[in-house]
Every structure is written in structure tokens, then in C-alpha cells.
Image 1: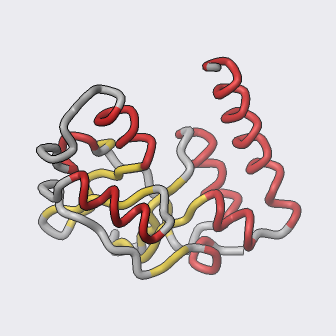
Image 2 (image 1 turned 60 degrees about the horizontal axis):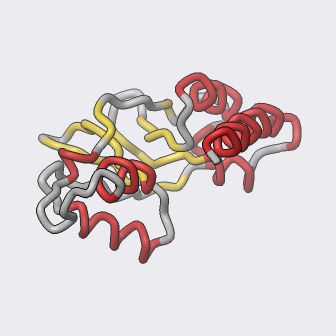
Image 3 (image 1 turned 180 degrees about the vertical axis):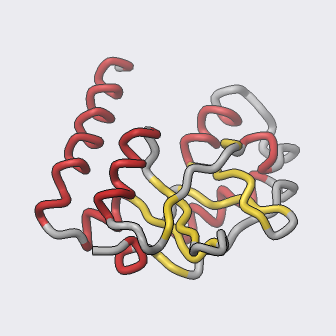
Length: 145
């Protein structure tokens, strides 16, 4: 199965200057765990719910003054829409991320693929790497507790 067959399409991205509180509301209202950040028609970062928790809330920052630029994870790991799900999962496992922006070969974002998308749409043979990622995350949470 190809990434474009499992991804979520038509993903909205936000400016680095967008207030973090606005992005947090969107994530809450839409039930999503991350949003892409773009500037000058290029993807420049990602913000996850974990970024907001660790880099803003836990750090004691005022959510009224912070923008996406201050909280986002810079540098983008991505996959292409014509890659297989196995390849995308391999990238997620290697980079230890749960979401990847999906680009076409002209490097334009066409969607977003998440572990949840893969779990819902993948064949059973593909799910072994997903189980490894879930086990790694569970182990990390147990060590932190």
C-alpha cells in the first residue's frame, strides 16, 4: 500500500507567527496531535501536542505571548506520497516520530501520515514495525514514571 492511499489529505498549515494558543485550540477542536508550520510556501517545522506541553506549558511560558516559531520542532522529516507504508513506518521508527508530512515529487505537501492512519488502513504484515514503535514509546513512558 502506498502512503497516498493511507494519508490524511488537505492538511492546513500555520504560519510560524501564529499564536500557540490558536494552534492548541485547533488541535483540540479537530482531535489532531500535530500541525505543520509553513513560511514562504515551504514547510519549516511541525508542532505536536507534546511540543506544546514540554516547550510551553511545562516550561512555564505564557501561552498568550508564544508563537509557533518558539515551540515548533524545526527541521522536517517527511515522506513521499508514492512511497510504501513500510518505508514511511521505517522513517517514523528511525526518527522516533508519530507523524510525517507527505510530499509529492515536486516537494509540495499533499497530506500527513500518522501512526493512527497506518493502524487503521494497513494490512497485517505492515503492522509489525508499528508494534515496535508502540512498545518503544510504552517503555519510555514506564521509565519516566
